[in-house]
Length: 200
Image (cartoon, rainbow, N blue to C red):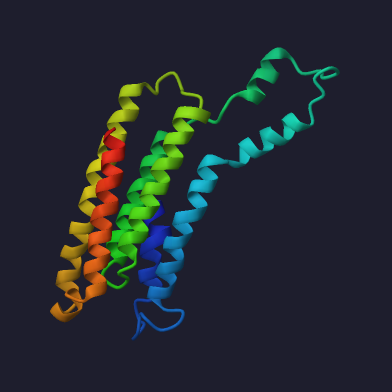
């Protein structure tokens, strides 16, 4: 988790620590926007279609069932789904949550982008877990559903933690700007809907 946060969040603050204007082209706000969009698209794609699964799919297209020298065990392994990495999934969730909170005071879009990212991640992980992945022997249903329950609590805390951080950094006029209000309400709605979905 610490490596994820350093590479995707803290490193941007370190790079732009001496900048006079974080909102100029190429500044912290622009970099944060691209980073949040990157988190929204690439990690879910790589989670659902990992590289080894792409290689396995290609290998299957090259197999001649009638003349293949593969054993039954090897052929069965080619048809098995990927292993669900619970630690990786939780690390991605915490990274997306903390990134949205830290960037929110300078980038109001971080709140809805973070909520959408967590929602997309939940959809991808649930689909992967329930449909594609093979379950390790130690990975029981109780462990998985306990982890998903933690996500529900994290999602509901995002908008309020962000607003609390913003109140200590920005002026009251900025805090009461309509864009901030709309972003906050959208984040609450998205977080609540996702939490309800997870609870079901």
